[in-house]
Image (cartoon, rainbow, N blue to C red; front, side, top):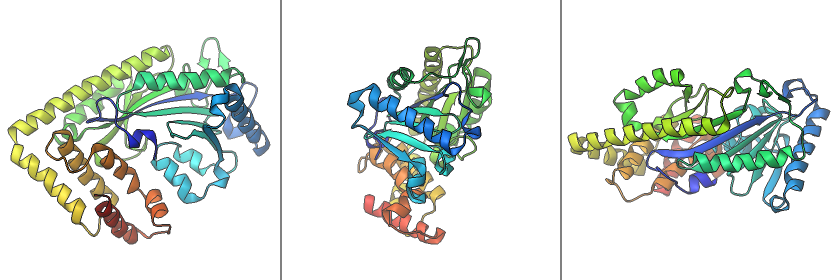
Length: 340
């Protein structure tokens, strides 16, 4: 289980995790979409050597995994743990990754760009996450010459990543903002302040379990530190608003809120069939109850872990079987009952 799921960090009642992703490309090599298999292997070897040889302390901490060597379920599990992208999981020809034992750092190789450095920590820890990612970036750059332009900054496959190549994001649990419709105002205003809001697994995915990923849109004409600070400020404001509205709800409708929390907890502990959407909604209700001190039989960490454990890849790995949709719904309910 990755560190961001095993532990909780600052503002854990609302912020599940903080992530920094840095996009880089090697100079004098075509972007990944134009790489043949031989040159793709060249990128893998160069990045691997840069990380391992650059710091002897990392030699035993990082593992190199080739996507082609991983079975379908294992690849899906890494996606569900937010350690690799769905695109990299499909790249069984040139794709690979370096991942540390804590699963807090992953270096994706030959995804959309040659290198995607990703660091993921629990709670609102954008500064620490950026510091960690920056160190890995500097380590690689000591051995590898990046594609860089004096005016445009770091060159990337997608123009939206030009400049710093930095994407900072926070994964937030915002049930009351969503319930009251206030989240719609945030969604509408976000693009005007250079912020984008996506679903639990990124662009084009649903807001399952009231989980929202909030990240910067602008990477050009602004420093890395400004990107991190701006997102941290926005996240802090959203945390304050969600917390305020939770307190209002608890004060104005205490019995209705308690009923919602304990009814959801009861279903999770007793249901025999649960699909992903319903399970995520129920887990969201229970997380809200825990955060407000209404429920103390289970921890936030346990409920965060359940969010991953009930996804398709984890389910099939847990039961060591290819499960049909109906079988997954039955086994999902069983896994939740056993966990709680």
